[in-house]
Length: 282
Image (cartoon, rainbow, N blue to C red; front, side, top):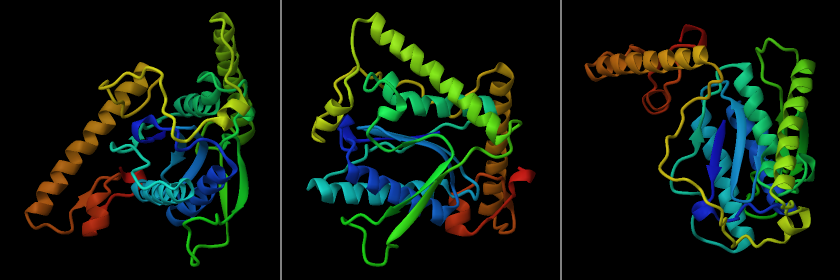
């Protein structure tokens, strides 16, 4: 699960037809360049959530290809010049099993409802996709140059390698999303409030900032785990990677250029063409 926030929690991603076009086009280009599979995306007014599978080990490149053009294009369309994205890097949380995947895709889908903005995911006026689908989008009139393709196609797919079929995934996901939506609606009713509504969301200025309380300097998780067994397995996996990486790096520094780094290594592969183990040998 990936999360990228706007600087100072500004509403720079406020829904509009152009914002959706920019994000959909940039997403399609980033997917085509890097092979990253996308399972869900929700572009909120001041942040974006994605659930992805990094098939080829090119996630940093994918995020660069997505974040840079969206920032440039939105700055151009909004007549802005400063940073759109927050200074801290994007947040990445590993989802080790189908259970965590299902939970987080449902979270992404229900995000606009749980934030008290609209009554259902389908009512969100921004770019939101969480069921298998695809769409072709025309190149926006802002920022993207003549060499960029006139059209690009994005695809949302079910995660591969699950114990569930694609149909079972859809059924379980719909149920999980509806459960979260129902709870969010009940909370709004219980608190005596109401949803902001689609029209009010669209009427907001991109210069506005979120005013709700947000806890700072907390623990930033590296993975999600719904069971203790999954938690312990992920701890072992991360520690094994760290040991393998340190050992390989020590060998590299000692002049051993054919040393093999563990799967998941990025910098050494991209910048120094180091060898890396394939996924099944990790």
